[in-house]
Length: 468
Image (spheres, rainbow, N blue to C red):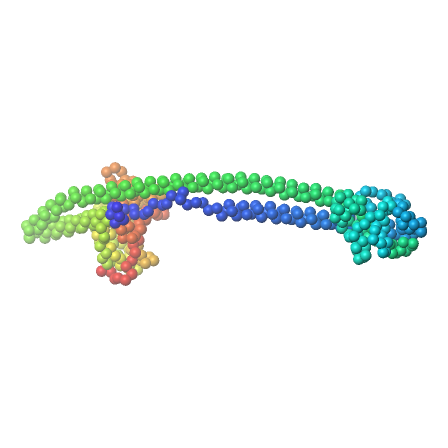
């Protein structure tokens, strides 16, 4: 069935299934990147701090060896020729009282020597220490093999250099070598602590992030399920509304078929009466009124049938004020009988519009009769006409009991009524809604303060035409 074939239809397409739309993952990606960046930042800062402390410890150790070398040089500067002879003979030497240790070695280097004479009497060779001594350096860093060659543990070592400036060994160099075993061990343990301090909070952070992501995923799945349920419920409501609309169209076709025959009989009888009432002005006027109203009913029925079948509506240039005036004229007798005041209020110059005059009048009549039924005796109803943002606005205000908020969305549905059984069919507002929609307009009903209801119809104005 095409759009034009849908009877009095709600032609809005149903919403797509939310399951077809994947939830965005940008939040998840951003969260993972933030976690990785945080771990990297913490680890980098901790590693930089550990390296800085390790370098500071090695610098302190090197300074200690320089100071020890200077102390030994000062002690040997006061020594005798026997010390020199002992060194040359390879005998043990050294300042008295200085404790010997496997982690600390000291050596003498002659100004033109190529070997180091140890305090324990052993002679060793170290190209790096000799080159540093000749270059006037104060500290030398040893690799593991070089430290082992000097009698130290096979770990990195540091050498402090000092020159003896007086005495029998003037010009000789003192080299004090110490292992960096403790510093390296502390550095290794510091790295392990660093690794533990980074991994522990990182693991906790990843665990919490995993829990958060799991909760987020569950939340997204729940939202998707709720969206699917809401879409299904909305689709069910649309199908129910379409079914009611289809029933309304079928009912309109049936009623039109059943009414057309007796309506033709009424019109025929009225025409017969006209031929016999030449001398009775009141009777002639009554017969003409009957014919006029039967013709109007016939036109309204044809318009509703065309609307139900999806036929193209007439697009006449119409005066909004004249449509309102004719609608008021059609219901005046009902308002007088009910003792309710009816007023027409035209604000400014209402523009023209295009559409079917009979159908638009019928829509306003339904709104006015609905306001009349909701009002008490001696109350008032106002029909307003004005231009609003290139649209024609018809407003019907009453002082009745008012519409309940929970009924606002239902009153325009077919067969919905708040009236007692036998007093209403629930078709008047539904038909008015379909008429307004067929003219590309909108209709709404809202409560008024402190009591009453306002019904508003807005239809696009004809910008290029003038009222007919």
